[in-house]
Length: 325
Image 1 (cartoon, one colour):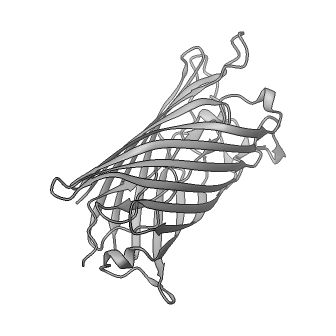
Image 2: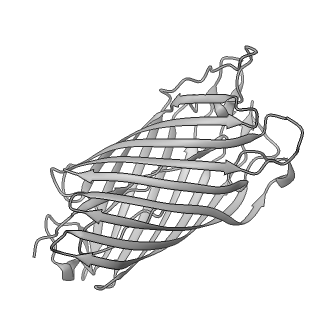
């Protein structure tokens, strides 16, 4: 039985303060493994197929003081992506992020951020490790599947944005890292042949030191992420080509300190554990997903001084749309 991919994908590139997220790539069909919102699925695109994807994320932050001190109040992130299945086991993606960042006074920045390019290599385990083949039966889809992916961002965004007073915005509010960044990630997916799918991933993202127009040299803190997810099929109708999944996830993030002119910055970095709950609807060749991501535990460096960064969110509301063609 040929593998039927009816939709899907997930891709995200979230940003909070100076720290920036990574892409989570994956597909899922009417039958077979589920696809979470944040955790990277190990399903690859079919050979010769394109995936168009859009993700919107609204982030609301806690305000630490009543006095105006330029605390970040909300971020809105939009991610646009085009993927292509070069082969059944190797995919390429181009990611175009667009962000808005507003402080408590409603002043902030908006525009396209650095372009990102990703390559994804897919494997499976069935009495040995092999590349993902062109077609798989439903029994084959029960095997463990894995991906290895590498991403690079290029400093294509504007790193010289200035506020109404003519001063350079905070480096974390600029629309560029002002230097490349690199990410390496791994994922593992196991479908149990019925309704449940478990997914694991881990990634490491490092940022090169960039130079800004005021002469400052900034290196954003490296990121280590580890995620696990359970996806459960609630409903499926083969005739209508409709499927509805529920998802629950645990998302761990370890942030390194930012460095300014070679010196580590205080009130940056730390650890955060999020929980994400959501649902995904597949219909023919499209997929729509929505969910909420909430920090449930954190240990931030100089926590009381951190503003508008991961761990200080009230919530993250997530929506995505994708189509395979």
